[in-house]
Length: 228
Image 1: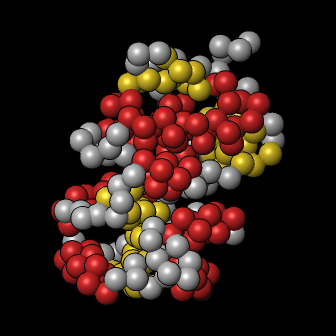
Image 2 (image 1 turned 30 degrees about the horizontal axis):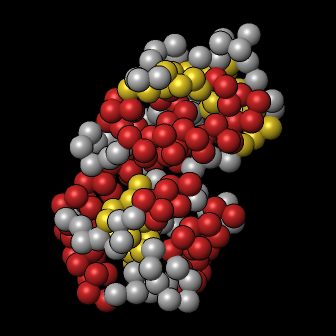
């Protein structure tokens, strides 16, 4: 059973989320601000964090940045009341895997939770597999990525995106196709979600950043032979 940490300063919101999350078959714990969430994440094991943006003491975006600085790679869905583009992009660029705008549909929230967990929860039956492309090595069993022999730190969603692109080497993939396969939904997401994650992924890949090629009017493709 997946364990979810709900972080929100509004008791009614936490109660609403908890009821639907538990009804969907997940266990959960709660925190009222970012500082409390960090303390719980440092001592407990969680499979996903639902993180409100606007909170006292430590807001959600600050908490998210501190999580990633501490190498806490637990997947995060941010909750934002304003729905402004800045909040969405700041969250995604800070390492969030997805976002939900308040007021939200509980069914949509549960669907997004399932989509993220489906991509990030370990699968015991998965066989070890390595893919090598020039200076880039991807190990899907250990979720390890090496660039020129040095390990790079990716969020779970960045790793999933890289694996999907790499396993479709040379194929031009539309943003809609990437949303469907990597995020597991084709109507909740936005093209900008894909673009933001590609931008962040490229920044981590260093000398291999050009392996991900923009196909204008379509989307992206993985082409490690292009720069040779």
